[in-house]
Amino acid sequence: MVSAPGSNDAPDRPDDVDPPHPADKIYSDGPSTTEIEIADAALAEEVADSADGAGTTDDSGATDESSADGAAGSDDGGGEASVPRPGSHADAPEPAKAAEPDGVIREPDDVEPDTADGEGGEARRVGTEGEQRPMTGGQERPSPKAALVYNPIKVDADELRETVERLSREAGWSDPLFYETTVDDLGDDVTRQALEEGVDAVLVAGGDGTVRAVSEAMTGSGVPLTIVPSGTGNLLARNLRLPLDDPDAVIRATFDGERLAMDVGWASLRRTDGTTAEHAFVVMGGMGLDAAMIANTNPQLKKSVGWVAYVDGAARSLASAKPFRVMYQLAGSRLHSARVQSVLFANCGSLPAGLELIPEASVADGALDIVIFQPKGPFGWILVWRRVAWDNSVLRRFRTGRRVLALRTKDNAVRYSRGTGIEIATSDAQPVQLDGDEFGEAVHVRTRVDAGSLLITVPTGHDTTGL
Image (spheres, rainbow, N blue to C red):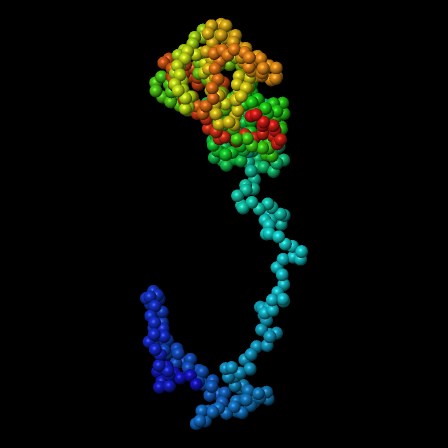
């Protein structure tokens, strides 16, 4: 029989059985020691009464088991059944009943498998209808989206938008975003807006100025750019050898094509008033006569006949062309001084009409090609034309022609260099052009190359050898 707390029969508790704990202060609103002792006494009395009903105890402390067993085994309805003693078999549950009602199974072989028969492998991702979806770590965008930036003057806007929307839908992409350029925004600002929208690709359609502006905003973004051939020149599309007569193939490459990491050139211009500005170029820029030719080209004529209009600009400029003194220095080279007509810094080398200004130029070599024109008199301009239109564009294509060039005496009418950038300074401000757009006059130009900073989309299987 359990002795009541405080009785003489209760065993003494050592003081260290339940030592105080720091958390006791936190739970100071719990029951007091007195309340616990009263509850223990009440429980001890209940246990003592149950034991007295189960059997009697004689003076020697032995229990009358026959009486207890008779009471426990009686089923004639006479009297109440006594409480079974702890440890007796009367309180042992039956195995069949023990599994009810929660269906607990104690044998491992009886556990039903939680997968269908024949299924194995790793877990997979499914859609709302149970269809299987690719698992890519949760970083994929369920509905990729493209943006089209276009010059409405250079393209058939309705047809272009319809084509981009149709091919986006066929590729499973969301409806594309469309942005039109204006005189005040050549495409760089709206391109930044598109990137802020989180687009997965950008398409550009327009002239070289539109391509340049969009490329400037895209540089370093990691988002691929698709150049849809259009406009009067699209020199970058020509230099990348994109299919100029199949815009659908180029647009489709946005969704399933390959990527080419190309270089982007940057030119920092300082004006006569000391102000500076930096702009990107993807084809070529220049200071001097080439910029004057572009500035003197009739805009309406250019819209009508394209690059042929620059012949008119050249005729206007050559009549009054005068050499000017420049100090220039390539990165890592010594300082030079020369009288020149023009200094070009190029990322690409091909011009319209099949002309090769810089045959060895590459958009992915991490360098800029520098061309210095310094002809002497009218005969010097003949040498310039021969170098560009005949030597580079015709003779270099054939083995015999290359042998002729190797034997020819070098002239200084056109000088080529290559480096990561060039710094040019003049005493008198000279006109500057970038990708065919005039950028006013400057007295100092510093260029640099941002290697592989622009991702260009090309059709699958497109030959990029030599680009």
